[in-house]
Length: 378
Image 1 (cartoon, helix red, strand yellow):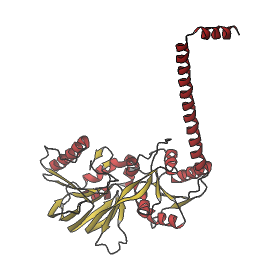
Image 2 (cartoon, one colour; image 1 turned 90 degrees about the vertical axis):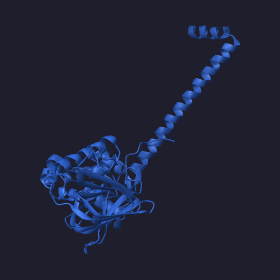
Image 3 (spheres, rainbow, N blue to C red; image 1 turned 30 degrees about the vertical axis):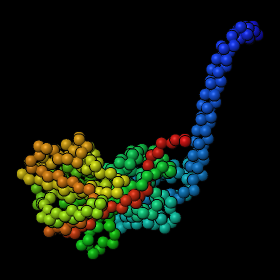
Image 4 (cartoon, rainbow, N blue to C red; image 1 turned 180 degrees about the vertical axis):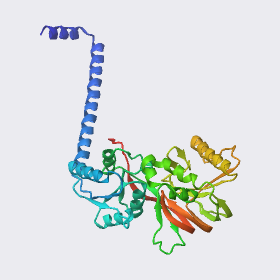
């Protein structure tokens, strides 16, 4: 009581301007505190709404899982447990087989009414599942359990943390990306163009992948490709004609083409290196790259220097001191390659076989991918 009486006495002794000033300060403090509490309350309500939607999620999730991957069974049990604990009850698992790839599994999932199809595997599983989802509007989720997981890394999807990847795959954050396609025109058994999300290639890169020991790849991951590459350093070059259609409809043709490898990139980033610095997965165009070497081993050393140079500079330019290597890059929406002799072709590390006549194209913004999303309240 004594304290209050002293306080009131001091207030009575204050001049009118001082009282007004104090009242104004108190009013400002009250308003600021009210705003802070209101914002916090709104955020809590928004978070509760999100959790409520998650716990009552009526989305049908189909998980296409590659059973050959290490710990695939363990991952499947974890996924089932996670979904049960988060109220995601409408789920199914479809396993890939030797005669049933991710594309067929994803089509089966769509036939079953799946809203979101989640690829549980490496880049091969991801690209084949994506092949079926392209253009459908159905979202692709990714649980990366492969060795490279290049597309997942480019999308910012957690690698090596299945719970975090599951959280992303079953959230509602997404973005649309381009889908590359490669068609082997001289293969009578081809019934569709093969999808790729990272890089498709003809020549040295395909031969390198084909000669990479799968067991070695399991042990040392993508470094195993260097061993396969060494086996093909002095293989014969490839010859033919290429016709590239630019984004503006212009045609660029080159006959008497000689190269080591011809690549088309939707994403140009691979572990440690940038093969195509300007490649972007959502610009509606592909980055085509033609690589060649002369002078034996010196040429390969020069080419390695070119790749390091553009990795550092982030520009699609050749090292100015290169003498025995060639790096040509051009952007476009399609390319047609006719070769004198068949060459191996690959998409995202999967070998398609040999072909002399190949068409590569892009489907702009054809694929919806679940990606990490930072919550915000507007």
